[in-house]
Length: 128
Image (cartoon, rainbow, N blue to C red):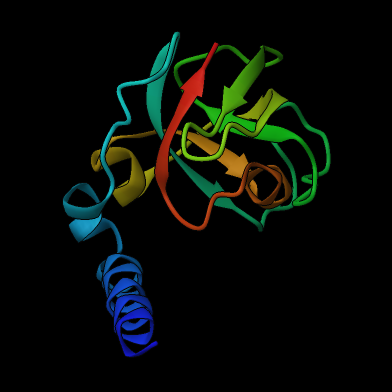
């Protein structure tokens, strides 16, 4: 039982350290799975905004995404290689920007889509 608690505590420290470090430490903790049939991209998520690049109202719970790599209106099937969850998102905004983009993020999911995929922070996703 003591070993179980020790393992849980060490796991919590590792997860907390990854989240606490933010984008400056993302590549230390977030690695490609190497198990994607399609393209594997670093993805993040966002939950605020008023209007998207398409002019529609931003829906934080929608199955939408922001991307610079794919044109607006593109439907992408994204899969979380850690748990196998998959869904189709529509690119309706441009991004990511700033530090996230400089650190390699190429897809920014609406918070609801990220939650349905089981994402807890930035991670690599399979895109097809």
